[in-house]
Amino acid sequence: MDIKKNIASLKQQLPAHCTLVAVSKTQPVDVIMEAYEAGHRIFGENKVQELVSKFEALPTDIQWHMIGHLQSNKVKYIASFIHLIHSVDSYKLLAEINKQAIKARRTIHCLLQIHIAKEESKFGFSEAEVLELLHQGALEKLSSIRITGLMGMATNTSDTDQVRDEFRTLKKFYDQLKSMPLPANMEMKELSMGMSGDYKLAVEEGSTLVRIGSAIFGERLK
Image (cartoon, rainbow, N blue to C red; front, side, top):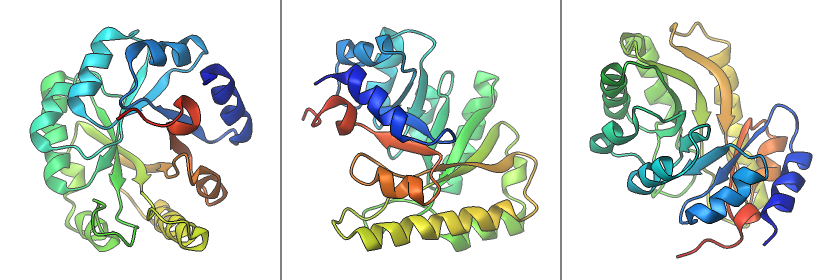
């Protein structure tokens, strides 16, 4: 697997406004270092324990993104260094991130995960829940987080029309929020959607962050 070549090829395909997050979950440190030595600095992990051990083992200029489901009781382990949390799927989790950010004396950047897939197994806010939080003024109380956009995961299906429709739905909601008055700690700047199998569709529908693992590193290690 030519990791350097794969990264270069992907970056060539992506428009200037779209950032590549190399999904390094289950990959050993030496494999991640290959990507690092190829000039890549943005990596995504989906398990806290693995993320922490890699943060401790790898160069300090890496931007670590949390892309998997995050439990409230695990936030404290990543609060001091995490660059962006993509998968914020409840107000309870937002409040805990804010609490741990205060302790770490920093502002933590977050994306709100919106449930767009037809599968029940996917986490996320509904659009109505986000609008209700804005209506209640609940988000502006969280002074040590910054919500910089939205994230969504499409249904795991070969039906490209369905996947495109789900991405389009998320972009429409993103645009809706962008046109609204938002609290000072919230702006619509990032739209995280698209993985190895569907990133081209996601980019066409307006993604600014694509989360790609197997197209860089090969099939995931179990």
